[in-house]
Image 1 (spheres, rainbow, N blue to C red):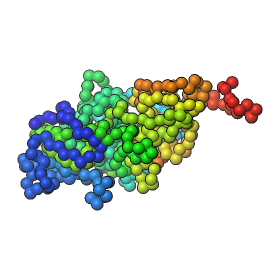
Image 2 (tube, one colour):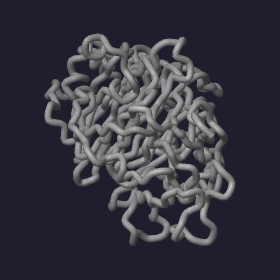
Image 3 (cartoon, rainbow, N blue to C red):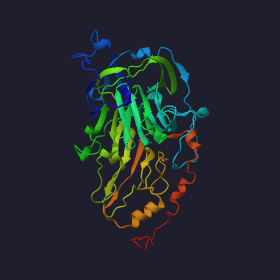
Image 4 (cartoon, helix red, strand yellow):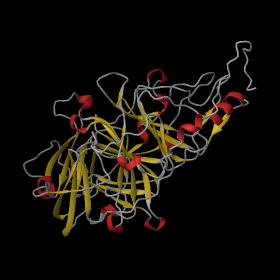
Length: 452
């Protein structure tokens, strides 16, 4: 079975399950994890995403049965530079004028000397928060890819990656299987999992999207609370790839590792995606955001945006996230006597937003697919003037928000803007002007304001 990264072989359904899968029948040991001799001459290796003694509900680990142990991959490494990728606390963070920020659509950059970009070399950090060394916070990135990774492989020791394609589908060939992920879907790559990224349709042009690098605890499904046992992101809709492997010997390959904010590369003579079988609960997965079951108000008031949380990485403070991944999907708006868009507010959490497709209801003008915004800790934001007037004065008939998909990376830590992002031509220097015209309407002699 060679070259199995060329096509996905299938998926296992469920979130955080104890999976077991083998690309060759009988490759998984029976009744134990580390037999004296593994089937087919494979090596047993455990990949741990949590300390060994973490409580059972928090324990993350998988057993991998591979052609060579990972110690063969990193015998001799050399530092390499990926100038677009930054890690918190970023040393080149810039000080922009205090206030909300927004960027328009960002075209793909060119690599050094005009070379094509892969998913890894085309990563560009926009914000960083917290400190990767203490496993707190996150970074928000844009990625750009003009070619597939062929004999180049990567893993991230600093955090897990949540990836949202915005233009162009990606194929993630990982050591635990293969996933195709298109715009409208997400992929999550855990710490330490080796992978390469291919363009599903290279003829369609460059791929572009967003990524969240989560330095903290692993992402998991949020508690539903009073919502009950159904709704939001349902566990059955998450898909983990079945075992597949590359049998590639005698080929010069490169494995790059992100560790401690630096990058280190090793030349190896085989593919590191050589896992023939595995079992456990620490594995990559994908999710189709169109399967999200949103909950909303059926009478009055706009509920808290947290009801649109898909995944969350907690902190030690209950209800305060290291990272929340939130989406604003198609949905019906039916609330009566209610200002329906998100309200004006200041938030102790900081919010990085992007738009996959369509229009975001609080910013119908200016916030475009492929763009992004940053509303930082305790800085005010809310609907622009046009959205305010339309929501305040319009007829409150049932309205469907269709063909829209916005998202938010929300964290308890302030997000600092990198030099790259601060110098982008797409940064809107006049973004704050969208709130011009939100003038005084107060008249103590008139209780019922009607816009006149």
